[in-house]
Length: 256
Image 1 (tube, rainbow, N blue to C red):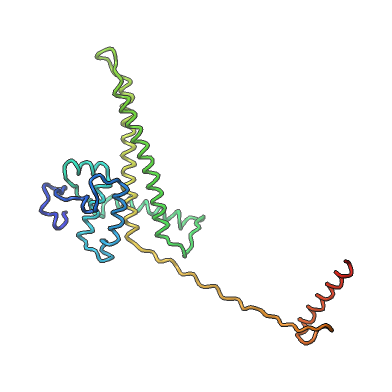
Image 2 (image 1 turned 135 degrees about the vertical axis):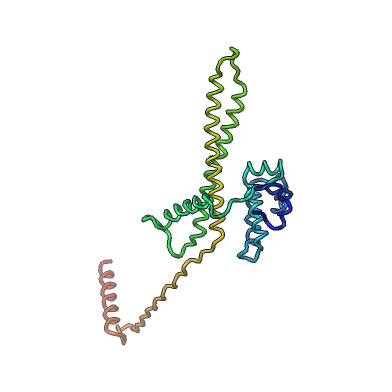
């Protein structure tokens, strides 16, 4: 699968070359990951087919973001200038994305302790949860990369004095390094899944229910006509209220 004007740039199955992905996002080659994400989300607002953008440009934008937001894919692109084709939407990863979103929806809506109301913007709430999940995974990814660097830095300094003997200490460090690499690969996969889930939710809109205006309570106005001699006019209830008020004040004056 290729993308329109990119067909002429295909050099082998599964890869595309001669496409400046940084230019697609309007960025320089030294752009940070956050700058790439911001540029993608900004351009997505105008290039999505639902808002009048062309399918061709939308696919190229997604391709640029997918490659440049992935550390390994970006490094390979910078070195080789090649881009792997994206997987079709009906692949296994999509099932994992749907499963991830289902967990969020279950926790937000179906759970007995849900606090959401029909008036809440469910799309915004789900995106907020996804962003928090992505932030937590990103922190874990950074921690693991730092641990890997420390192990590699220390591991290079071990040398066994007796030549030809098994290097148990370096083997121990290598074992820990392999475990960290596997864990980092898992987190990287989770980050890709979360980002794809976010793109999927962002492709929708949600219309919250409108709150019904509360009925206005009629103001009760009581008009009482009084004089120095006592009550004149008014209903029997009004007269009784004033009589009780007068008795109360007389009692109060008598105690003072």
